[in-house]
Length: 84
Length: 84
DNA sequence: CCATTATTTAGATATTTGTCTAAATAACTA
DNA sequence: TAGTTATTTAGACAAATATCTAAATAATGG
Image (cartoon, rainbow over all chains, first blue to last red; front, side, top):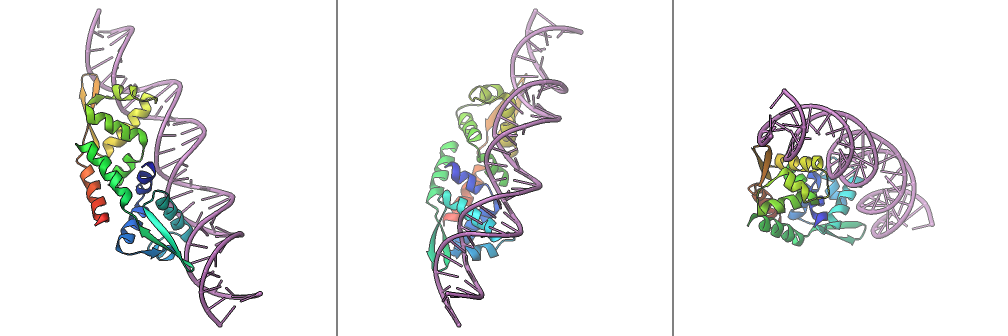
């Protein structure tokens, strides 16, 4: 939960999630969408994965990342609880 | 939006919101609920207010804080968009 | 007006974070 | 096997953050 909030607290990471909503992408493809070096993007992807917001799968020499929205349900529930 | 995510990215601030869900509280009352000094809590309240997650009103020598959940709707909508 | 109480502001400090470059690892291909 | 491409790891550094103590501000009550 803590890790999810932390992962969401960054514009670049939120945009990565938005990209992955459209389609699965390799680390390199994701990096190309930003003006940030590949190691930095790799770090962001690591944080997103730690939060379970993305999953990754090695396909040949590529690592394909996918969005995982199931943890967002917890955040939604947290917000709903706060509102009621 | 950025400020809301930032404000939510802290355990203490999330607990403050939970407290304020139950009832409005003065800055001092809130501080007493934590093992943190009053200036630190004051700083957290400032960040929450910047994010529009709480409002404050001066009543005599006290400052009463209240929860404001309207901005949480934006977060909810952001999550829903990501999920659909 | 002075002392007390409530809260915030200022300034310092240690930790965390986002970014970079350089190097390491892993997989394909000629 | 050697060279190329894809990604991550390691290490450094500047900026942001959470916390503290001390001082300032504001309101109350004798």
